[in-house]
Image 1 (spheres, rainbow, N blue to C red):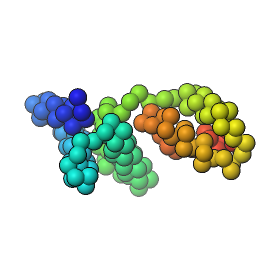
Image 2 (image 1 turned 135 degrees about the vertical axis):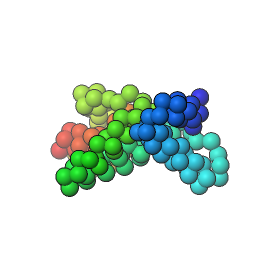
Image 3 (image 1 turned 135 degrees about the horizontal axis):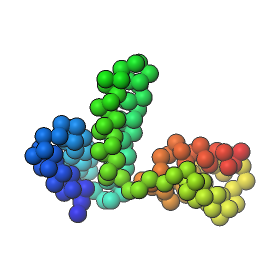
Image 4 (image 1 turned 180 degrees about the vertical axis):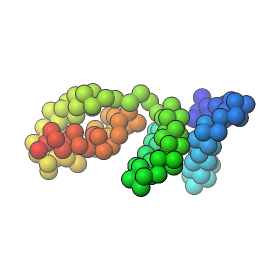
Length: 148
């Protein structure tokens, strides 16, 4: 079942339940899917593209919530955080820092990376290995820590 089909099913359920936050979140996902398909010439999205799309939506909401918190607008940050929880359901199981650390150490050993000059090579492999399962910032900070 594609992401679009799953979202449509959950959208119907949210409408019946009159769940406003879920409706907003699911409509945002559906809109993003349709926009991406339109730009790509109405083709079906690959699972990798779907994960990237959902990650982008989560990141946008996290950034917005952080800005609202900085400005002392908790009333605006809370709906963003509620939407994050709903949208994250469509991402694969997220890795914890220990698991990310283990994978990065393995990649460093495999590539023979010796310092910061090899960060690009390690980041490329790490990003592919943990696509959708870890945040890029977390991966980057761990790679930096290990290479320095």
